[in-house]
Length: 323
Ligand code: ZN
Image 1 (cartoon, helix red, strand yellow):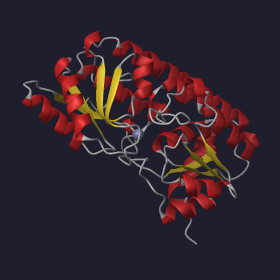
Image 2 (image 1 turned 90 degrees about the horizontal axis):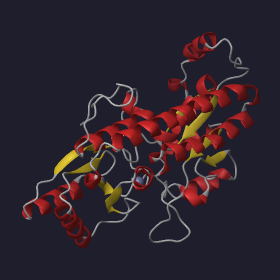
Image 3 (image 1 turned 90 degrees about the vertical axis):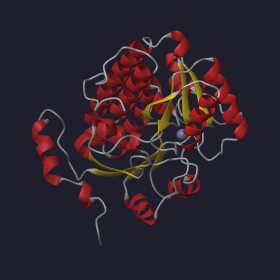
């Protein structure tokens, strides 16, 4: 049998990790095998689980979770994992049925399940469903750590203090990221605080940082944008003299380019302000391939493109440079 986790299980690194954190509880057994659907969840579980977990994320850089369907190797991995974390709120629309079936036999948890509905944005078309893009608000995303801590602790009670300590660090980083985002975005002139992107992934961002947010497609990429929507948005760009619009790594830029052409035809030049990480993080092994780096990149890119005088290197000086 091929061990699907073997590639990701640097046993020596695990042991070195234990040596480095001598004060932490020592692994009593093998690390937990964890599957996470999106990169953002995989990153959170890695941060919280530390050396006590081996995490495999199903969706890599540039993958759209609204349309992603589990592959055969994903199915094998999920049935063999100790626990699978997914997002919920109908983000993984094509995987819901499979995950519901899996939930009857295996440990399967949606990290957004326990969020207070009062802080969620309701779906424009359905009363009983919510915008799933909660990782765009660091304060809300930090609350999703609680399910991860609880379920990892259930499976590996000896490591409770490690999980709790790591989660507390994660929350502190999220608070610092939120403060940076607020300060940085305040430097955008008020009239330019308008964020226009390929699909409606930035609702929580807009609510947290007081930006008008407009997506060409709705909160799922599954719906097509009509010509009416494009011409309505072109009028807004022209009327409000919006200087820049944004593309997303996990969505085609076709509609964004149509907008720019439409505005140009009315004599208003709009530039592409950069590429944002909406529903997928950057490449594995880079700063932008972490949730902290992803949000830092977005905030810094948006602020600079819309007129704020801030460094392209971001909150920690780690960004490769705004696109
Ligand atoms: Zn989305």
